[in-house]
Length: 357
Image 1 (cartoon, rainbow, N blue to C red):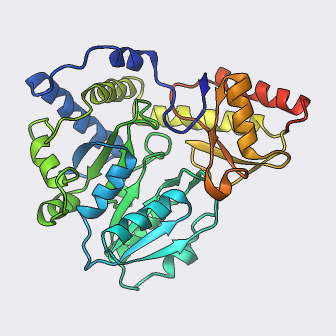
Image 2: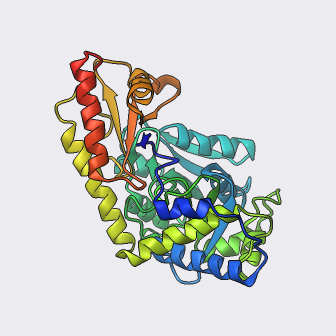
């Protein structure tokens, strides 16, 4: 199967080979050294400010979303959520569960965040802002630098979900003034799912040691204290963390984060140029490099997903809910090449000849 989903994605052969090995015991100096290197490289690639820290959680990106909330905010806060799709809505659900007050800027699928809408909350007493830098359900990318300037002006704690954005799009954590940036193993890191990563600014680290998160497993304080010696408080996804180490080192040795971001961007441009003659509309005018979201004009989106999967051995990414038949997504992350997209374009051409699209 050729995999153009946005997570899990296609892994490099070297990463897959690590997954085939026996998982080692992890309370060792060797594993600690690997984890300390993981932290160092994550801080480097995020361009985090000095004295920042990295936390590795065994859980999907949603675990890091919830951990960021419960280790940073209390019922005394008032958050502002940029809600442009299912993952923005997930932040709202997390805040509801933990009884943290919030306002939200609700956006239509694919709609960008304008400065006017953002600054309508200027001086309104919000203490934190939560945003999915790439709202993966529609592929829209928000201006995280503009959001950072807004947060700085209003002294707001800035939580950035970069699960799909990390590596695919440029992130300069120090420049945008983000307090927490999260990502996941199964997106552009191109490893198996099961590990999420949170990079914490010094302000976030200080706050994590002061706030009681109301849980043990997602406690940043426990993770930070154990992380000082390259360990985790509980049994982690050891094999996946070894794969993450190999992937981070691979990126570092092949030109660094800028080179890998440029590679992903080139694939996105290549695909978007190739689909000009098909009956598809772009869902957003502000797409992330990670994914292209398309609205088919002549066929239900889910049917295209099903036919490609069952008859062509190709995975694209369907949507759920109200968008199930309206939008499908094509990812540009993972170990993909232009030749892979040629196969997808050929399949689209065949669907067109058959009258399916």
